[in-house]
Image (cartoon, rainbow over all chains, first blue to last red; front, side):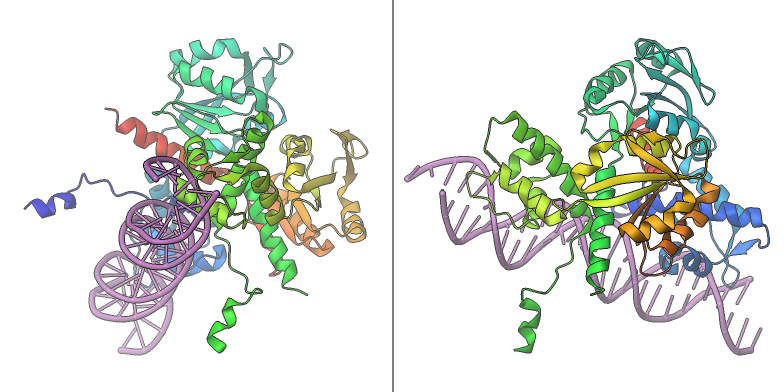
Length: 223
Length: 223
DNA sequence: TAGATTGTTAATCGATTAACAATC
DNA sequence: TAGATTGTTAATCGATTAACAATC
């Protein structure tokens, strides 16, 4: 019947972004639990306590991994970890390039933790001849002119943008023309890209505003 | 009458966090407009077009600054800028300390843009004797042992945490004991603080997950 | 067994979007 | 004046939270 069409297996249910953002938090927590190694199962109640999230929200969030728990026992830790990895596709690592090997760029290059989340930054680019040809924490720095060729040859889809603000748009243009489909933008400049290209803007000013408003309210309530 | 009590001037209406996060985006945009200097007024329609936000949402967001626009004309740019500054308290600058003068810490120290958003990082701390006593982009590096005294003497309320993950919790404890009330946490470790202290966790893994899911969906829809 | 915890269905809450009279 | 744009009130949408039977 027509009204049952959307019940079929292929219908893609949209994943709420807030839940998506919480998954890596659970993941890191579960990894720690597993390393401690003193329990095989964990309840949503316990996770919620430790992470300051309501248990019902924990259950809802974990539901999207399609891992099922057992009443009374909770969830099997190893299953949950595997479930999150599978859902987020962390088994097959995605390669990325970074452009702008300044302090922030170097910090990101040096932080190998993203590999755990399926992202491998394989090289960096800069226009500073002094940096070109050197390595930062094991990653080669190439001249920005080499980017288009290398993106095409290696089929790179993700670019990390850590250049000074005035260069942000022009470097983004180079990325897009080369075939980059997703830009992780760490500059505080809004960049324009054609449709079919994603920009994830890491907006520190927004976070700062939230922090200082919360602090202000906190301090106000004290006097 | 009792039922009118919550209508009084003093009742604090909660500010939706999503709207709060968008304010700095409008602010940066308006500053650029002002510098170009070719218009005195701007409509929500125009802002929405340029920023890819629905005009009605722009109006709702700007409403919280209590700046009123004029039908047909729009909002006066200079009033909006002032309105956002006032609402977010950017006139009186807040001082902050940063702990952990590695690459990421240095990047944040070197980025003077936060002063525009009311935050002034006045010094940094580290436990590396080689760094102590030196300056990074004009900011002195002190030994971490000096932190408690200086926090108390200067009445610092905000601490920025950019130490390696294993030190995150213990440094946070030092901050809290010293009197820090808000911690901007750039490590990927969840830290525990007593009530009355705020933690703003800058979770890059969450952003990365959103970016890669969106990219995956984009690429899937192409074949 | 009794009690804790699950998955599921329903209720609530808050943010986004729509509708529209007022107006420069 | 006519039309674009405002502020405000109402409708929609989606995420969070509550309720509860099923169950190890």
